[in-house]
Amino acid sequence: MFSSLGDLPVTAFQLASVPITAQPLVGPTGLLAALTNSVFVAMIVMAIIYFLVRAGTKSPTLIPGPVQNGVEFVFEFLYNQVEQVVGPKVAPRAFPLLCTIFVYILVANWFGLLPGVGTIGIGHEGTQMGFLGLSAEPKIPLLRPATADMNLTLAIAMCSMVVWFYITMVETGPVEFVKHIFAPKGGLTGVMKLVLIPIFLFVGVIEVVSIIFRPVTLSLRLFGNVFAGENLLHAMTTLGDTFGLGPTLSFISKIGFTLPFYFLEILVGVLQATVFALLCAVYIQLSTAHEEEDH
Amino acid sequence: MGKILSDLGIYWTNFIAQILIFLIVYAILKKFAFGPIQEILEERRKRIEDTEADREKVKAQLADTEAAAAAKIDEANETAARLIAEAKESASALGDKERAKASQEAQDIVAKAREATKLEREQQLAGLKKDFGKLVISATGKVTGKVLNSEDQDKINKETATQLAN
Image (cartoon, rainbow over all chains, first blue to last red; front, side, top):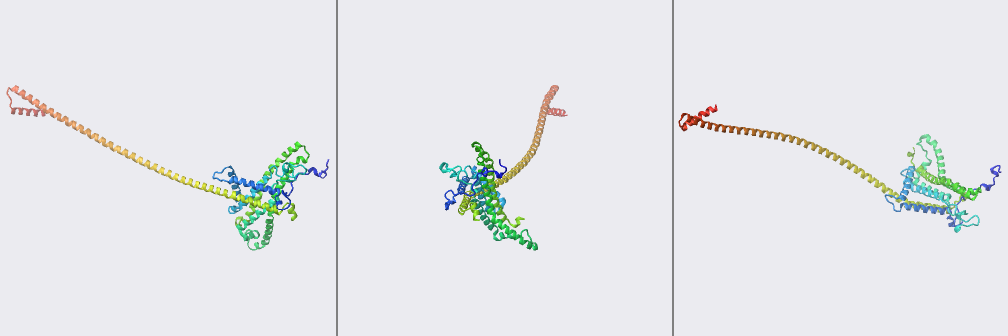
């Protein structure tokens, strides 16, 4: 037997994994290369959101039907949450961005959990080809969870930072914004203020760096969680095959091992959407809150 | 930096495509969700406010009506009490009047009866005197055997009447 983990053959624990990058569906170069499997899913998510919203608001009535009621409930709930964080004055301006972020990420995360996403695609490791050239163990998955692509998470983060900057400038103005970052806080006066000015300047520089890195942290957090979840589900699905279980046990393991993690990923999907939107709301609140409200 | 981006699969074309999709989602939500839902919520809120205002108005009107009804009932009670008192007073006065009238009538009847009795008595007495006078005259004529003239008869009648009166 093996005396240590180092003696184990590497292939014995080679779990199935998902490539870190999205793959182009049409061609590797040119503009069409932008049509990756995650962009394709993002477009499907966009269509789903469109149909859901249209179904809910096509003919709005004062006494709403079930779909309109659901859409209104989500809308009102999110608005109240945003209002609680950023305040009633900024909420009307910040809500459209934050609501879009939450809804888009949530639908994208949950869509990524549907059977077939990441498992059905084009090409095959061997020579077998499935129906219409599609394969169940593909080289290039046709559908990749949209939020498991850094391009999408970074795009949302960059958009949110642009809107954050716009709201901050409109609400406080550039002078107040610079003062908010660099000026001494806490109503200091006299010698104490002069002594602490260099410290606050230094803290301001750190603050600027943290602001610059916000898009990176936001996008990496979301990407990391969803990408890890996708890998986890793939690993659990193929665990039976990896350990060389028979066809029956392998089939049972595909369901038994994967199911608990599906529920976990449903939760992670909501959590990550909430965290992303909440952090954006907090960033807006921090930069638009006035000095007298802080103390 | 380029290697990091490449390792993470970040490419300008993909990045811009994702930004465009995100902006389209934003536009979809803005056009079909934020606007219409905000409108319908605002309309519903206004309707609830109006209903609440109407409810308050109706409540105030109800209170006014109840107060007016209570005032009317009090007024009716007072009027009823006054009418009852007046009726009692009137009934009492009418009773006294009727009693007095009845008493007067009774007294009149008694007086008339007395007068009638007296007249009857006087008539009877006059008749009696007359008859007695006739009897005395007759008796005197028979006793004396003399035919009494008118003067004698008057004289005898007067004496008889005087003695009867005594």
